[in-house]
View: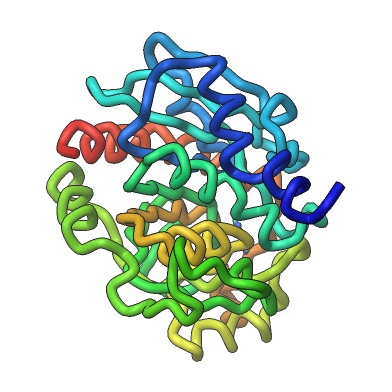
Length: 275
Ligand code: HPA
């Protein structure tokens, strides 16, 4: 197959065509649910549930706590697409594969992305279970989904990142829940949790939270001109400060995320209702 034909067969348009064969709904917002945060997908009414494996070009989710299905239906009276589980760089996918779903959402006509994740708290004022509205990020993954040939029809070669996290959506989130934190999320490649020295460095860089996801999707959404809201769930305190050092495990992360996820679901439903 020529490269162009390969692209047509497995690019975002082919994925949209496959999704449209399963549902007539055209969502106004796409919601990405992170580790242990999949519960919101069960609140979607009249849902079509499409396993990632059935969407061409879309990789399956292999991470714990990530179901791997696209749920399309109605939430808070609005048509939505919910990713129950995301793809991560640490799973071995390249950055373009990790962010491919966002290209599909854009090609489908969706203008707003809501991303969630589980993260470690670097800011000593945070507590595990806190929800942090992302105001900015630091890409410390050492890779970028925008690398490679650029289609100027879709977005600029050198996207401006100032104002990536849409002010109006952040304001809506605070209207729904008046006890949300705000801050800068640092994305690392993982899959190991950070050393105490790395955590102190990331805090010194200006990070309030650290995690292994979200930034790839945000970079693509930004380049495509989408409106963006991202909310991080602090599942453990990762300060690296001697005397306060906690061990962290995937099971503990999932347990806290599942509890905090109920509150996060309310915030997202409230924001969706306001869209
Ligand atoms: N570090 C990185 N990723 C995470 C953490 C953490 O402490 N907690 C949840 N995801």
